[in-house]
Length: 353
Image (cartoon, rainbow, N blue to C red; front, side):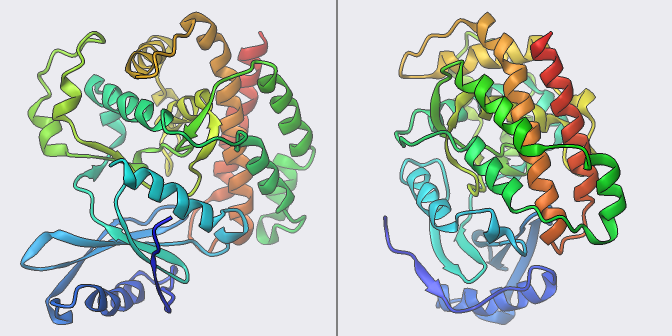
């Protein structure tokens, strides 16, 4: 792995103004020709785990340094060393920005052009096609290892403490009778029995983690998209970002998780998620893009999909409960966990029916 410069500094995730002030100073040590009074900042997303913003010289907005500041307590559930290794693998093949350095609680990297996807853009066929194309490229990378979904889920569950502070009564009401470990073990047995394909997955493809060149996208909105056309992707630049959870995993987990994320983050609405027709079209195109020639019975894949959707929902429900106990970010993690858990039960019942 290429060596990464280490900066002996921390950025306060709970104070975005202080974060930017410290980052300006750090940026001048990285870009020697920058003067601190000539620098500007742009916040990309406040997120529900990390803070992400950029620093740039006012005379060149494209030459940016992007800072990702880790949320408080996230090291309890995220292997930062592995994250850097996976990020560098993707960067080496043009699927991720180059890492410039790391500091005590975050990473600074180069800038990738584009804006995070908006929820309504997920409905656009050309966006669905672009996501499937980039996902297929990522899934073809060699990584090895066992699927991370359940070991990581067990890590979340094992990190849960019985105390939920001001949310104690609400937690007891919604989750007091739930045995998360038994439920995850049951899902794991069902999925392992399928002998599903294991690939290098992103595992967190929500809209905030997908960048697209909106100018190019909007200029091509009249394009007549079809599954058979393989040329349009060349005119739509799309990148995945944020590799905290990238690892070996079931390819259908990555796909199912992306479908689940159509619901949004801050205002979950599962009526936004793709219907069966859209899911099937996405999966058909995904396998058509695979250069390894992998062929699948799409009808069988569609029958298995709800099981992986259930696993994704349980994964993020247990994650949210850990965040509820540790994060300093103002977000209703318990409500998020409740919504994801309800969807887990729904998808599991669909699979078993």
